[in-house]
Length: 323
Image (cartoon, rainbow, N blue to C red; front, side, top):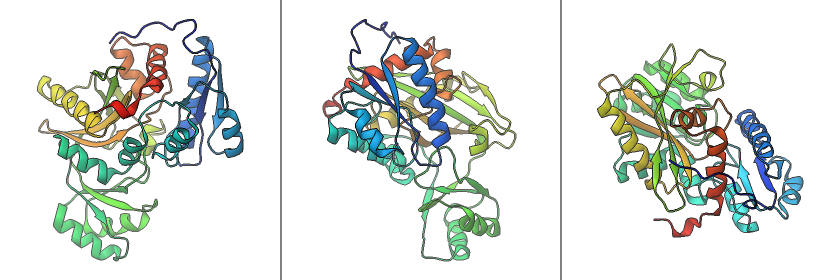
């Protein structure tokens, strides 16, 4: 994918980098925000950072900017609420719109849309909040079998994720996992793979080389994503040519089916038989230089600065014209 160099007058107004926030992904957001702010400044773009958690400063800081660069993740930011605020204020912003953000954050709703578009997802079920953990564990074991993954419906970064191998441990996981609405999902042992998607202003999609995250227990956990647990990366992922094509097809299918804009990152598990199972979308993936999206872009010959330019230009897309 060719990304044109920065024009001298392309971003004449300041760019507000919105970061921080109050979700459990605040630390990841700040890392992305600081890195993006520094990189844009070095590129000659007038930039200032705003913390979503500082609401009065946020509203004042958005006044007079050319666009908002969303270097943030988690609740309140990746779920459509921030996008709705910016739409109301008339401030162009990077990434996907309100609908794609809201649906993408909800794993059950997003899975339904991806399946309808032609993707392959593990079987899953909502955990009833009014039932006892013991009764739900028995019901889930009957529906999905064991082992299963228990996780919040609307959290990112594998926050709260647990693997249950017995009915007893499943009941414990249901009681332990915090974060509001919960779900259980059939667990497919295999390789954790992420696939990045870039979309140009005309709607053409470019899929980046898949990245495999190798962990000792085969689970790409919160700790592994934060670098506090052992994890090795391989890009391109070590999969067969047939699985590679399937990953790319499903990533594009999910990007379009969820109505994402400009860029997105999709998480998969590739089971031992080579089947790729779509797990979730990141409509605002992490943007540190060592992050997954930057790794995939670099493997495709796209520098970090070029990646940021692509994302910046995506703020000027009229999302209402997209299919």
